[in-house]
Image (tube, rainbow, N blue to C red; front, side):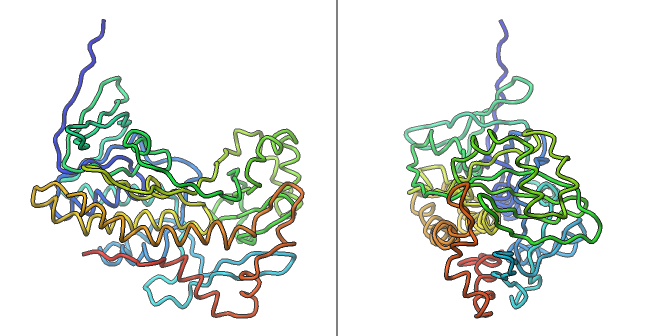
Length: 406
């Protein structure tokens, strides 16, 4: 009989999840002198088809930390405007060029590069620890308070971390949603997504957003290849798969004839992983000893790529507001945790409303529907009122209530 070895760690803040919210929060708390451990269930950050947009507001935070020039030495591409080709006519619906920030553009950079960069910066602080292959499986409760977490280690060992505060940054499938009894409020997302990549030729350009009957193609320039989101109506995955992989290839080639000679690179469904789009939020982001931020608190649609931006902004707000209490060796009160939610809830709710309601008409309602037949009036106005493009650029690029490093 094997006796499981249990490792025990005591710390001030335990961050669960090594995504943008978790790594940024851990770094900023350690920068203030708080003892922090970040638990990440995977061995590294290398996962394909994660959101790869770094928004102007996040780049501004990098400037405030003094790391912007170094970050921008990593491979990336810049987008100063987002243009959709609808009904054969290009419509620019977000223009970042007039933002009064150091980087008036969205940088497309592999998320694992960004996370590796931030983790390396965090390791310069004595109080920062990152444990990989540590999958959190449960909470530790003491007198109704979350006093830490239990994790399963990759070597079949076990880990207990006790902390004054647990930050739930483990995404839309956060264990804390279930285990902490936090109520989830859902919205009906209009689409689901298949992700895949196709080779990109040097100098090749494609419209970022191109709708067709029953689908939309979103093409992201990743240098050597196109990262493509094949957007389908919600709940239609089985019908798309039943039509066969050849039908998917033909659909891509019909919408973008330039890619027709490369669709054979889609060898099967394993090359096109599925993402069920989820838009929801917690009614309450916290309970005593626990605060959820990022996707764990408010799962976003991939529309506009704003989920990463909101997660980073949440992390900055949490570090700014809770860091002094943790640094002093005190446990944040429910009132302090509620203050973080109150500051960050409005931006999340407004962006979700835009994603589900205002932008919903840009996507097909069923497999026979062409979004060009029902472009929302608000998007048609972008053709005639250029100022609206700059308003949308600010909403996507900066967001509502942007945070700054204290």
